[in-house]
Length: 600
Image 1 (cartoon, helix red, strand yellow):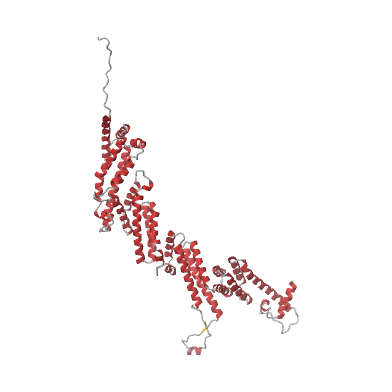
Image 2 (cartoon, helix red, strand yellow):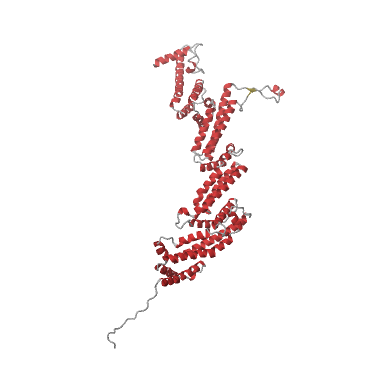
């Protein structure tokens, strides 16, 4: 035994763990993942082990190779798009689709265009669906990379990056090497063409278009994924609104040239309903207000005045022929574009004044039918000889003609008001703005008639003298309402007061009033409309009548108590009242003075 020698330890040789070793380890794990991605994209993922794949990605990230794995996955997806997806999509793009996208005319029937367009959309939808499915499974496999590497380095998740790759390598992929046209151009034109065909009455696959729209709503301009940067908002929606604007401009011109106003109203209403439904079922709901704004501008606002002025079908014809349905639609459409109802308000005011001035003109000229009074019939012998001869008409006196004209004018004005009131309730939803406009128009044309105060007073006078005879309380209230309505329009209340006092005085002095209670009801209504200062004098006239009746009764009692009666004694039976005779009989005047002195 050799002294000085101890026992030695034998160490195992070290493994070469330099960069070369780590590289080999990455490639081994990447090969596992790459094969798995291939299987996933080829829809053979059923044989894969999630645990093994998760461990492979975990090892790569743990060895600080997350950036390399991230880039390898991106390259894999780009190669898959270029080699597998785009060739399939290019086969679906026909020359007709390219021509339509370039703004030309396809030259093919709508049905053929619809079919080729649907085939293209089906292919693109299938590619998008497969991509989402594959990236969903890929994200599960690379979960550790997303959580650690992407989170620490503030990078977009692999799913978000893959969506961006679909945007850049599918939708923005050039169709030809020497062409600037991309897949997105074809997609936009196909969707817009399909919508255009539906507007023309064809049936399209709404569900298919909706699926593609979902794709555009899920893709963004950048990986930052700002809500305002959705491809739907930045690329499709502007093109949709522009194409819709052109379509409705052309349609409005066609309607203006070939159709009556009623057709235009119904078409505009139908288009608004269609666009609202389209946004709910085919494209995005948040486009609804924007596309309705386009329809309102191009189909309603742009040529509204021309449609309203159409001869035979415009606003004038709607009013004259009581086309309530057309007027209701018109109100609904104008309410959408103008909260102040400006165009409709102006048109209604003009028409009311025009019709009112026509009434004023006819009444002022006396060119209206008047009843005639026939003379007493002749003896039978003379009738036989003058058989077939017309009876002579007895001419009316001036006062009767004036009263008849007043009644005719009031009736015509009230009929016109009833017409517009009925229209306002049935067609204009009792709109206060239009109510004010109509009221002002009636006031305008009524006060342009210089005899309006006199005629309203004559109308009341005729009804209170004989017009209410035999009528019920309800019918009497209707007459008083009509009179109050017209009084409300009259601006020169002082002129009306003079005429009314004159007519009331005659009724009271001549005892022509049919009912004192109705007279007082009329004055009460005037008090509410005009005020106490106006009716004070009228109420004083009734007090005078009461005093006259009292004095008359006192005078009658005085005469009866004289004792001896002679032929010169005044007979009171059937005689006028004291108020009527005081100015014509000195004896009665002295008696009144005596009574008054006793009271004082």
